[in-house]
Image (cartoon, helix red, strand yellow):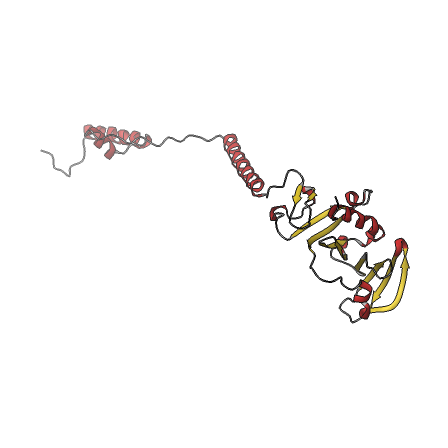
Length: 252
């Protein structure tokens, strides 16, 4: 009997070499001896994960589709959030003794309704005067107070005005406000003497809203109209006033 510590024989060395080759093959194939033994005992061997390569074109197409869907959703939400505009003419029946029919496009706040005591309009000068004048006249219409006739503009502002008076075309007279008064930086324009039919205050310097630098208040029938417009439209005051009287007057 050989000792356990005796040197291996040639047969033993051959067996060891075969065992080493078998272990190397198993390591190369990714199989551990422990797993092989487990497989021999009937345990199922776990399959390695399957890696599927992704097509970059498919990934890019999916990303673009997602971006497009988000953009369309935003556009749809914006469109649905817009207040609906009336499709045809609007009949205002609460301000004047007779119903007033106005184009829907003139209303500044269509969602506010027309059953209250005020309407806000932006009327093209071309439609108001029947000419090719550009720009808009902004009109706020309310019920006129039931009071006595107010003072003429010339008398109302007399204590704030200088003595200077400058005649202008179209029957207008320009008066200047004195420095230190509440109306400093404005000029007063009067029509037909004391401005009983038409008067307007206009800023003389730069205005944040040049198209609304002039302010005028007129009364037509049972309505009080507050007007804002560009100083360039002052020569057309008579045609503009005639258009307002045609729209809001007591007679159709």
